[in-house]
Length: 210
Picture 1 (cartoon, rainbow, N blue to C red):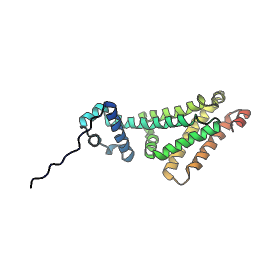
Picture 2: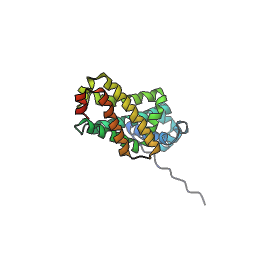
Picture 3: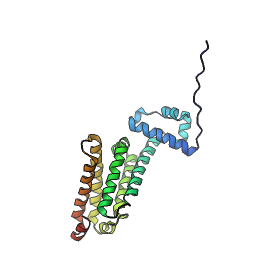
């Protein structure tokens, strides 16, 4: 009896942006679950239902796809923080909501966050990470009710930059150990922020924003 021909699923035609987003999603999932060298363009192209040659019309190299996935993770984190920190009025409430959003992102995107943090030795990834830090710093120095007070204290910038490093390290440790609650980490980070600001603000301002 002749073997029945196997019908392959028809390739779906997508417009350029939709195809790019599809490849980006596939690449992001792959890079978050496996080492960079274990991910192949051919595999991703096959999953997308396109040829390997067509893949390069969207991303010239695998590294371009990797960097685009890191950029996307960073943009999502910054956008998330920008939305929630404008809900509350008081500095402590804004900080609490911001840290909560940051940790929630880490919890939902653990592999992506780890890739972003641990890719800092790569100059291009480090540049993406630095833009995240600058965005968080700018939120304090330009977008918050406490901004004018902080701008009048040069040490405030150093304090906030140091605190951002603390948030990153604490989030990475919490992500890998998972032996304490998210609320505990959030409260520790918020308390640490206001302890540091208390050292650089004038006494009357420190009391006002405590």
